[in-house]
Length: 464
Image (cartoon, rainbow, N blue to C red; front, top):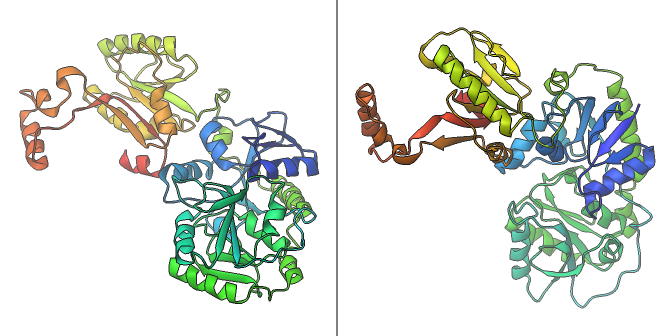
């Protein structure tokens, strides 16, 4: 079985690229930042990388590591929802994520370098020293840096707080992987304040160094650690419970069996990380041969590091068909790599994909509103253009807005027709007046139903 591993940021000193390299070195599997059609299985170590860049790549079976889920961050929950139904084999480390993944899935064992992270002599301190580590994302605040700030304020002068990594509201004393073992062996306790994590690795590394830890309940796989002396727990995100757990911990300073703490993570080794992947992939790869929608698409379009894109036109009657032909040619003149679908009673010849749809009403409205159903299913991002819309420049920014996480983008009417009151005509006056009365004003932006785009997800499916 040929497995190819895909990881972004291979030159950076971050956890996921390190895990990818460790797996490649231990198995002989190939590794790069793009999928390879010469493999039997392409494995994305970062599922978000797949969602952002490769949803239109389907030349082999696909696997991805679903590290963690952030349901309250719209663009990140979108990436999970995009990848989850399209990936053939899902790997995970924490049971809480395995429980919400469907289809074929494998629990893999996180690796700790037991030689690198080991017990060393620890210096004595005048007051307890508590350390945190990681790289803080101020946008999501999932590392719990606010909890740390509150805790440091509460224990100001009683406890010294230090950090490894970047972005923490305390003094940083290390910023490199090589410096982590010394960092752990210099502190009295390791604190994890995270609200959401995949594993996380640092508390396991601290335990391997024989350092007691203070950890949240319900985060990553931390609940799977044994209940032994030196592992203190608090309710995730609860500052009062964290204060209490910290107070209990510092009363026990110097009383812990460091070898017992190290033994709590002895099963988390590089060998276990490698073996859990090899055994899991061999079992799954030889079993279920069903392919997901992403794998069965008939298009030969190569990945352009974007999700599957396409543009949808509707045209009935000779005037509209004549306009549509010119419109499609104008679109292809600026965005030739994006496929064009035409919904009509007969093909024009200019389109890439013909959708046979009878003319059922005025202006083909039903075919327009059925766009989610009728547009090719492999298109994750769909652009609708009226048949009389001439494209005079590259308009891929509309797709990029969707790829940033927005569900839908729609244009407003241009010029003096940009407000609803300017669109009142003799044949729609009653409808407009009723709308204005319901809304309470006629100061409404007039949206242009002739230019809009959407991404496929549960919300837009319900909308259409």
